[in-house]
Amino acid sequence: MDRQTEYVLRTMEERDVRFVRLWFTDVLGFLKSVAIAPAELEGAFSEGVGFDGSAIEGYARVYESDMVAHPDPSSFQMLPWRTQSNTARMFCDISLPDGSPSFADPRHVLKRALDKASDMGFTFYIHPEIEFFLFKPPVVPGIEPTPLDMGGYFDHTTLGDGTDFRRDAIQMLERMGISVEFSHHEGAPGQHEIDLRYADALTMADNIMTFRVVMKEVAVSQGIEASFMPKPFTNHAGSGMHTHMSLFEGDNNAFYDAADQYRLSKTGKQFVAGLLHHAAEITAVTNQWVNSYKRLVGGGEAPSFICWGRNNRSALVRIPMFKPDKASSARIELRSIDSAANPYLSYAVILAAGLSGIEHEMELPEEAADDAWSMTDRERRAMGIRNLPHNLDEAIREMENSELVAETLGEHVFDYFLRNKRAEFEEYRRHVTPHELTTLLPRL
Image (cartoon, rainbow, N blue to C red; front, top):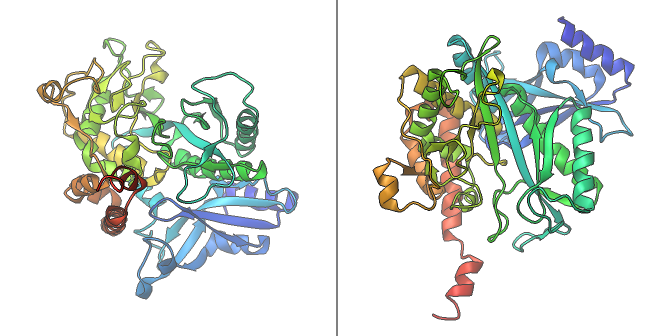
C-alpha cells in the first residue's frame, strides 16, 4: 500500500467520513457518481468497484457492459457542502474486468495524450478562465432565463447575490485544494468568471469537473441557479473557457525564447501552428453542443476565424504579453473552448494538435494584427485565414475526416461521439425555433 493510499484511509478514520463518492465522467463530460461506505474503500483501492457500463453514455454495449472503477487516491478531498454527514470524493480510472484501461474512459484518453507528450519530454500545463451565468429561479426550459444581476465587465458595484456567490464559491474551491487566481463580473448580465491557478492538464481537468459541481452546489444553497450553457442570451456574450497553456521540459518553459520578439520559442510557434492547422477538426470536441456555435458567431470576444495574434482578442489563438520577460509566464491562449466542454477530451485533442505541429515542424502563418471580424472575406482569404465551423454539422464533418482526432480519442470514443453529435444536430435541425415563429408566421 503506497503512502497516499495510507493517508486516505487514515484521514477517513480521523475525520469520521461516512460516505465516499467515486466520480468519473461519461463521454459527453457529465459527471457520474457512486457512493460507497468507508468499510468498502480498502477493497475499492485493491480491486475497484464494478458497475454496468452499458448504462453510461458512450461506455459500452449491453453484451460488454461489466466495468470497474478504480479510485485515484491522489484526488481525495472532503466535500465541504456535506457538513452533516462527512463525505469525501475521489476521481476514478475505469478499467475492463481483465484490468486493461477502458477504451471509453475520457480520463484515460487524456492520460494517453499526456503520455505521448511525456515521451517527447514535455509536461502540459493549463490555466483556464471559466465563465458561467447565474440566474434567478425558476429556470424554465424553453423560456429565456432572468439574470441574477445587471452588472457589466469588471463592475465593482453592490451586486449583492452575485458578489456573495463568488466569494462563497471561491472559499469552497480553496477548501477542496483548488487554487483561484482571479474572479470578476463578466460582460453579460448575470455572467461571472473565475480563473483557476495553473496545474498539469490531468489535475486541471479534474479541477474543472469539481468546479462545475461547486458552482451548482453553492448556487442551490443560495436559492439561485448556475449554468455553463455557452449562449443563453441572443443579445449578450456567451460563456467560454479561454485556456492558457504551456509545455515544460523539466523546470524550463519550452515556449519561452528571450531573443524572440514575441518571447515565443520555435517549439511554441510550432505548437500554435499545429493548433491552427487542426483547429477545424477538433472544434466538435471543444465546442460540442448546437448552442456552442451561437457563441462563435462573431464578436463578444469569441473567435470565428482560424488565426493568431498578440493583443488581438478576435484571434483563435492569442500570445499574451502580460509579463514578456518572465520565462515561466510564456504561454499561449486558446479562446474557442466552451466552459461546457468535456475537459478530458478537449485538452487531449488540443494537446495532440499542438504536438502534431512540433512533430511536423509546422510553420507559423502570418500574424493577424487587425480585428478579424472587421476584415472582408477577401482580406481574410488573402491572409489564408479560414473560418471555424459555423455550426455543429460543419464541425462533425471536419472531425469525421480527422486522423488526429480518431487516433487521440480512440476508435470507441470517436465513433460514439460522432454518432451522438449527429443525432443532436438532426434533432436540432427538425426543431421549429421561436425566431422562425416570430419572423415568418406573421408574414407567410
